[in-house]
Image (cartoon, rainbow, N blue to C red; front, side, top):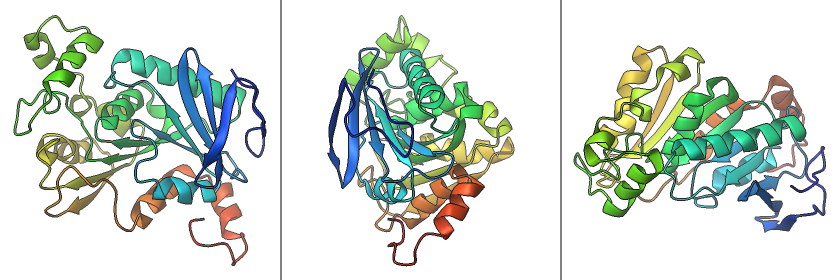
Length: 278
């Protein structure tokens, strides 16, 4: 793997890693155990070196990423496509977490961003690693693969991705997949016990990943377990577009629950000429 600078960010040149520009910030694409890890580096890392980790679709609706990079976050993505949050993906995430935290000093707790199928990656890893999870922002997120791609409820489903679920999770039949009780909607207790806050953004007209079969179930169950949930409903909106026209609520949620007190103090002392969120 590339040799990376410890502070404030990665070295200008990293052997084995491709360096490029990403919205004015330095992006590194590195090979980690045969998979590509993308790490975007702030110009100056905030104290504690907080970071945001994407489940899927890195670069889509990037306003929160750009704002948090400006506040000293790193932004991370690991390319494990078509695994739909299966155990192999969770294991790959854990290996990258170990590399970034123990070798390069990023915070032990990451904020997670799960858009659509990315929700399976984020929730499944968080359930396995609740003490390493600062918070979860889930946007039109898949929280039960029986809803999508299974299409066993109101949604359209995806036969191609349902077949992938069976292959990646090792199910021998449709019946075995339907009987599985380890989806995010079934596995919230460890997150609640670790006091991991959730932000759920959804369109209430989503007919691909129906809200009431996914985030809605979490919104009902998580508070009963003692967990904290913030909901942002988008009336009449379908599965797309993700995000919000004004990303401020997303940015502030991730900042509030991930940045250390030292980071917040450091940010508060920045020059008044620094654009908000930049």
